[in-house]
Length: 316
Image 1 (tube, rainbow, N blue to C red):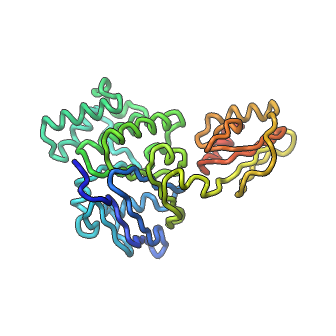
Image 2: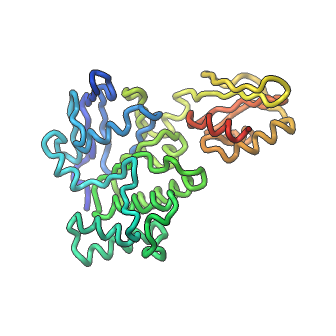
């Protein structure tokens, strides 16, 4: 099923307030059909609110939106029949098998029997779960459930798919695997994808275009390469042993100076940080993390500000 419109999503001054508290303010977006658009921002920035407005599940306080050429205000039901959605919860029936979950949702969308069988086989094959199709969904790991939920969102061959934080709550290895398979699945499907995330690395790997939102305000849009470096990342300075262990967060560019060979304590800390999502060893000079190691002091930059608690857990 092709997308008949050049723009899959258009919003004009889209605004939502909850009891006079603004959750989204004057959002203006234009997303081309056939692209993967990432909505990047911290928790509570307005990402999920935007999806619910575009689906007609919330009424805007002001402004308007069009999805696939249809007005959300007047054609919300028509839109919901033609999009795929994965919100905060996977929406699966855990007592049903993977196969029966997809069959159930295929019946909801009135797919013909032959089409239903073909779609189920294609989708379970694409997420490498065909051999496990008769297992109950409730017995699967969270990562496997998320993959099945994405397949469920694609069962009726929608023109547009909304994925709200699809890797949220997964461990780094599972999140990395799901991202890789999501990229492959998206390329095969050729759909317009609207994906929300708070992870810069995820946006860079998956998306063609990215919009950055914070506190309900759209800050910038562009390709990941255009936006990379436009916003300074929080810096965490960690002192390990030899005094009051402390961690402080500061904004700004990297301090001047060359990297030194880490002390044994610092080297051990860096090894522990390898397993924290959004943080990588300083020595790799990666996009996610650049830093300066001096004695027992480590300075790292984060691609994901929510990684700070995980850093603390990794080091204690």
